[in-house]
Length: 227
Image 1 (spheres, helix red, strand yellow):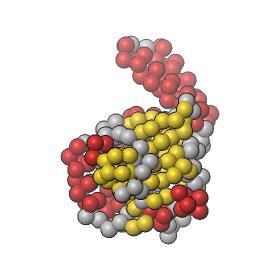
Image 2: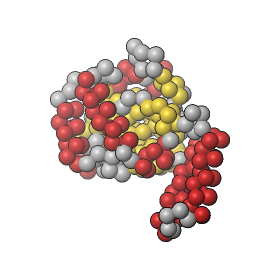
Image 3: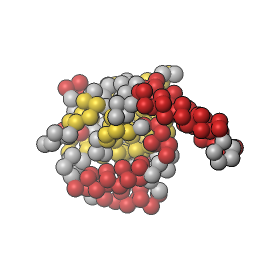
Image 4: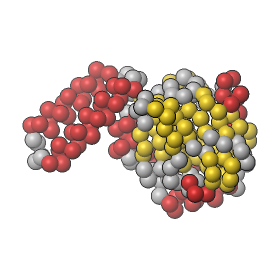
């Protein structure tokens, strides 16, 4: 399931992020690559232990914790702390699949990567190229979102970032382990949650139909969740 999460960060927060990122020290993006990705990846990123990355990443996770759409779509159990990358001057990331297990350097923290996320931090008219191209269930999707918007998609998907031929593409990226491993089950729960919310909006408090739908949702979650 591919889900767009709009307005994760407001414009003033994005501007503050950009100012700090533009003043930061960037390194070769292959610092966190696996063997496959290292052959395909040409970009720069902040080091994992960067104080700027830690601070901005914490702000992103706080914002997502206040997003009902994100919670419903991801059902997050564990989240890899956000990283930050930059593409310019023809840099790109060729077709690849994200590693199944992500380790945080120097710690015992690890997650199974069920979902990948990209939070765009540059306005789309500020750079050419840089589309996140995802081979999704219903065909190839090209994603280039306004600054502050995020896309969430299965980490098992083949995807790439097309070459940036003008300007600079800034983004945060990270991975999540969901309480529900199976993407199809997450989709069913997401659709059921959205439908229940729509019915509840038209019903009085305590309506039997809403109570029944809510019960079905939680019983399915109970059946499928790892935690």
